[in-house]
Image 1 (cartoon, rainbow, N blue to C red):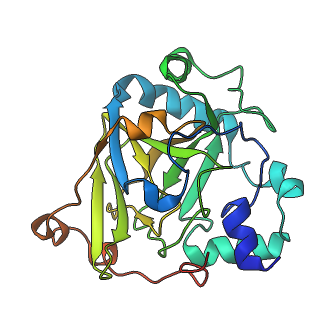
Image 2 (cartoon, rainbow, N blue to C red; image 1 turned 180 degrees about the vertical axis):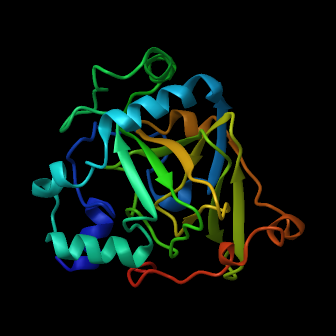
Length: 249
Protein backbone atom coordinates (compact mmCIF):
# COMPACT_ATOMS: atom_id res chain seq x y z
CA UNK A 1 0.00 0.00 0.00
CA UNK A 2 1.32 3.46 -0.84
CA UNK A 3 2.16 5.83 1.97
CA UNK A 4 -0.68 8.22 1.03
CA UNK A 5 -3.29 5.42 1.10
CA UNK A 6 -1.90 4.11 4.36
CA UNK A 7 -2.32 7.45 6.13
CA UNK A 8 -5.81 7.96 4.73
CA UNK A 9 -6.87 4.45 5.74
CA UNK A 10 -5.16 4.26 9.13
CA UNK A 11 -5.45 7.94 10.21
CA UNK A 12 -2.95 10.78 10.04
CA UNK A 13 -1.61 9.33 13.29
CA UNK A 14 -1.81 5.87 11.74
CA UNK A 15 -3.08 3.63 14.52
CA UNK A 16 -5.57 1.78 12.32
CA UNK A 17 -8.17 0.12 14.54
CA UNK A 18 -6.10 0.49 17.70
CA UNK A 19 -8.11 2.23 20.45
CA UNK A 20 -11.31 2.31 18.36
CA UNK A 21 -14.84 1.01 18.87
CA UNK A 22 -17.17 -0.42 16.19
CA UNK A 23 -18.74 2.50 14.32
CA UNK A 24 -22.47 2.74 13.57
CA UNK A 25 -23.77 5.15 10.96
CA UNK A 26 -27.21 6.29 9.81
CA UNK A 27 -25.77 7.79 6.64
CA UNK A 28 -23.03 6.13 4.58
CA UNK A 29 -20.09 7.31 6.68
CA UNK A 30 -18.46 9.07 3.73
CA UNK A 31 -16.92 12.52 4.10
CA UNK A 32 -19.21 14.38 1.69
CA UNK A 33 -22.37 13.09 3.35
CA UNK A 34 -21.80 15.31 6.40
CA UNK A 35 -21.41 19.07 6.88
CA UNK A 36 -18.06 20.70 7.63
CA UNK A 37 -18.99 21.64 11.20
CA UNK A 38 -22.13 21.26 13.30
CA UNK A 39 -23.16 22.49 16.74
CA UNK A 40 -24.22 19.56 18.94
CA UNK A 41 -24.96 20.92 22.41
CA UNK A 42 -23.98 23.36 25.13
CA UNK A 43 -21.23 22.34 27.55
CA UNK A 44 -20.23 23.84 30.91
CA UNK A 45 -16.56 24.32 30.03
CA UNK A 46 -15.93 26.18 33.31
CA UNK A 47 -16.31 22.84 35.12
CA UNK A 48 -14.03 21.01 32.69
CA UNK A 49 -11.17 23.49 32.36
CA UNK A 50 -9.80 23.28 35.95
CA UNK A 51 -9.79 19.48 35.75
CA UNK A 52 -8.01 19.67 32.43
CA UNK A 53 -4.99 21.28 34.06
CA UNK A 54 -4.68 18.36 36.49
CA UNK A 55 -5.13 15.80 33.73
CA UNK A 56 -2.43 17.33 31.52
CA UNK A 57 0.01 17.37 34.43
CA UNK A 58 -0.86 13.73 35.16
CA UNK A 59 -0.25 12.63 31.56
CA UNK A 60 2.85 14.62 30.63
CA UNK A 61 4.29 14.66 27.11
CA UNK A 62 3.83 10.95 26.53
CA UNK A 63 1.35 10.50 23.70
CA UNK A 64 3.52 9.16 20.86
CA UNK A 65 6.07 6.87 22.52
CA UNK A 66 3.61 4.34 24.09
CA UNK A 67 1.90 3.94 20.69
CA UNK A 68 4.93 3.71 18.40
CA UNK A 69 4.73 -0.07 18.15
CA UNK A 70 1.11 0.21 16.96
CA UNK A 71 1.59 2.62 14.08
CA UNK A 72 1.73 1.30 10.52
CA UNK A 73 4.64 3.44 9.30
CA UNK A 74 8.21 3.94 10.46
CA UNK A 75 8.84 6.54 13.18
CA UNK A 76 10.67 8.71 10.64
CA UNK A 77 7.75 8.54 8.18
CA UNK A 78 5.37 9.43 11.00
CA UNK A 79 7.33 12.39 12.30
CA UNK A 80 8.14 13.74 8.84
CA UNK A 81 4.48 13.58 7.79
CA UNK A 82 3.13 15.14 10.99
CA UNK A 83 5.75 17.87 10.92
CA UNK A 84 5.00 18.67 7.28
CA UNK A 85 1.31 19.06 8.06
CA UNK A 86 1.98 21.25 11.11
CA UNK A 87 1.92 18.84 14.06
CA UNK A 88 5.44 19.21 15.41
CA UNK A 89 7.03 19.65 18.82
CA UNK A 90 6.48 23.14 20.11
CA UNK A 91 3.39 23.69 17.96
CA UNK A 92 0.92 21.01 19.06
CA UNK A 93 0.67 18.34 21.76
CA UNK A 94 -1.87 15.62 22.55
CA UNK A 95 -2.65 14.38 26.06
CA UNK A 96 -4.57 11.10 26.25
CA UNK A 97 -7.37 10.55 28.77
CA UNK A 98 -7.76 6.84 27.99
CA UNK A 99 -6.09 3.69 29.16
CA UNK A 100 -3.60 2.65 26.50
CA UNK A 101 -5.14 0.30 23.97
CA UNK A 102 -8.73 0.91 25.10
CA UNK A 103 -11.59 3.38 24.91
CA UNK A 104 -11.84 3.49 28.73
CA UNK A 105 -11.05 6.65 30.63
CA UNK A 106 -8.13 6.54 33.03
CA UNK A 107 -9.02 5.93 36.68
CA UNK A 108 -7.62 9.34 37.63
CA UNK A 109 -10.03 11.28 35.38
CA UNK A 110 -11.84 13.76 37.64
CA UNK A 111 -15.61 13.79 38.26
CA UNK A 112 -16.84 16.60 36.00
CA UNK A 113 -14.91 15.33 32.99
CA UNK A 114 -16.05 11.77 33.64
CA UNK A 115 -19.66 12.94 34.04
CA UNK A 116 -19.48 14.81 30.73
CA UNK A 117 -18.50 11.66 28.81
CA UNK A 118 -21.05 9.55 30.68
CA UNK A 119 -23.81 12.03 29.82
CA UNK A 120 -23.40 11.57 26.07
CA UNK A 121 -25.90 9.27 24.33
CA UNK A 122 -23.10 7.83 22.17
CA UNK A 123 -19.90 6.06 23.13
CA UNK A 124 -16.57 7.79 22.60
CA UNK A 125 -13.00 6.69 22.01
CA UNK A 126 -9.58 8.32 21.53
CA UNK A 127 -10.50 10.87 24.16
CA UNK A 128 -7.72 13.43 24.58
CA UNK A 129 -6.76 17.07 24.86
CA UNK A 130 -5.23 18.84 21.90
CA UNK A 131 -3.07 21.77 22.95
CA UNK A 132 -2.23 24.17 20.12
CA UNK A 133 0.54 26.61 20.92
CA UNK A 134 0.59 30.26 19.76
CA UNK A 135 0.47 30.81 15.98
CA UNK A 136 -0.10 27.09 15.26
CA UNK A 137 -1.29 26.64 11.67
CA UNK A 138 -1.61 23.43 9.68
CA UNK A 139 -1.70 22.62 6.01
CA UNK A 140 -5.00 21.63 4.44
CA UNK A 141 -5.25 17.89 5.08
CA UNK A 142 -7.51 14.92 5.77
CA UNK A 143 -7.10 12.85 8.92
CA UNK A 144 -8.66 9.84 7.18
CA UNK A 145 -10.79 9.15 4.11
CA UNK A 146 -14.12 8.34 5.86
CA UNK A 147 -15.66 7.74 9.29
CA UNK A 148 -16.21 3.98 9.10
CA UNK A 149 -13.18 3.01 11.21
CA UNK A 150 -12.18 6.15 13.09
CA UNK A 151 -15.59 7.46 14.08
CA UNK A 152 -16.90 11.02 14.13
CA UNK A 153 -14.75 13.79 15.62
CA UNK A 154 -16.25 15.92 18.36
CA UNK A 155 -14.58 18.96 19.89
CA UNK A 156 -15.20 20.92 23.09
CA UNK A 157 -13.14 24.14 23.15
CA UNK A 158 -11.95 24.76 26.72
CA UNK A 159 -9.46 27.60 27.02
CA UNK A 160 -10.62 29.65 24.04
CA UNK A 161 -12.52 29.49 20.78
CA UNK A 162 -11.38 27.01 18.13
CA UNK A 163 -11.06 27.90 14.45
CA UNK A 164 -11.33 25.40 11.60
CA UNK A 165 -10.61 26.11 7.94
CA UNK A 166 -12.07 24.47 4.84
CA UNK A 167 -12.45 25.34 1.15
CA UNK A 168 -15.61 25.64 -0.92
CA UNK A 169 -15.98 24.04 -4.35
CA UNK A 170 -14.30 27.04 -5.99
CA UNK A 171 -11.31 26.82 -3.65
CA UNK A 172 -12.31 29.82 -1.55
CA UNK A 173 -11.29 29.80 2.11
CA UNK A 174 -14.03 28.98 4.64
CA UNK A 175 -13.41 29.50 8.35
CA UNK A 176 -15.64 28.30 11.18
CA UNK A 177 -15.52 29.59 14.74
CA UNK A 178 -16.25 27.02 17.45
CA UNK A 179 -17.02 28.97 20.60
CA UNK A 180 -16.23 27.88 24.12
CA UNK A 181 -19.38 26.55 25.72
CA UNK A 182 -20.25 24.19 22.90
CA UNK A 183 -19.65 20.68 21.63
CA UNK A 184 -19.19 20.39 17.88
CA UNK A 185 -18.86 17.77 15.17
CA UNK A 186 -15.91 18.54 12.90
CA UNK A 187 -15.56 16.81 9.54
CA UNK A 188 -11.91 15.77 9.54
CA UNK A 189 -12.42 13.40 6.59
CA UNK A 190 -12.82 16.48 4.38
CA UNK A 191 -9.90 18.73 3.54
CA UNK A 192 -9.53 20.96 6.57
CA UNK A 193 -6.99 22.72 8.70
CA UNK A 194 -6.68 24.03 12.23
CA UNK A 195 -4.98 27.11 13.56
CA UNK A 196 -4.61 29.00 16.82
CA UNK A 197 -5.55 32.58 16.14
CA UNK A 198 -3.80 33.70 19.33
CA UNK A 199 -0.20 34.78 18.91
CA UNK A 200 0.42 34.63 22.68
CA UNK A 201 -1.78 31.97 24.32
CA UNK A 202 -2.13 28.18 24.16
CA UNK A 203 -5.46 26.77 23.00
CA UNK A 204 -6.79 23.70 24.80
CA UNK A 205 -9.41 21.60 23.03
CA UNK A 206 -11.05 18.43 24.37
CA UNK A 207 -11.45 16.06 21.44
CA UNK A 208 -12.89 12.58 20.98
CA UNK A 209 -14.26 10.21 18.37
CA UNK A 210 -17.94 9.26 18.57
CA UNK A 211 -18.95 5.70 17.68
CA UNK A 212 -22.11 6.88 15.89
CA UNK A 213 -23.30 9.69 13.62
CA UNK A 214 -26.44 10.05 15.78
CA UNK A 215 -25.38 13.39 17.24
CA UNK A 216 -24.12 14.58 13.86
CA UNK A 217 -27.30 14.06 11.84
CA UNK A 218 -29.37 15.54 14.68
CA UNK A 219 -27.21 18.65 15.12
CA UNK A 220 -27.19 22.06 13.47
CA UNK A 221 -24.82 22.75 10.55
CA UNK A 222 -22.79 25.91 11.16
CA UNK A 223 -22.16 28.74 8.77
CA UNK A 224 -18.63 29.97 8.08
CA UNK A 225 -17.50 33.38 9.28
CA UNK A 226 -18.21 36.36 7.03
CA UNK A 227 -15.22 38.02 5.41
CA UNK A 228 -15.65 40.98 7.76
CA UNK A 229 -14.68 38.64 10.63
CA UNK A 230 -11.99 36.72 8.75
CA UNK A 231 -10.00 39.88 7.98
CA UNK A 232 -9.65 40.49 11.73
CA UNK A 233 -7.69 37.24 12.16
CA UNK A 234 -3.89 37.06 11.81
CA UNK A 235 -2.63 36.75 8.25
CA UNK A 236 -1.45 33.16 8.81
CA UNK A 237 -5.08 32.19 9.44
CA UNK A 238 -5.77 32.35 5.70
CA UNK A 239 -2.21 31.72 4.48
CA UNK A 240 -1.83 27.97 4.11
CA UNK A 241 -0.46 25.15 1.98
CA UNK A 242 -1.95 21.79 1.03
CA UNK A 243 -0.54 18.52 2.35
CA UNK A 244 1.09 16.46 -0.40
CA UNK A 245 -1.56 13.76 0.07
CA UNK A 246 -4.36 16.28 0.66
CA UNK A 247 -6.29 15.78 -2.54
CA UNK A 248 -5.60 12.03 -2.74
CA UNK A 249 -8.15 9.40 -1.80
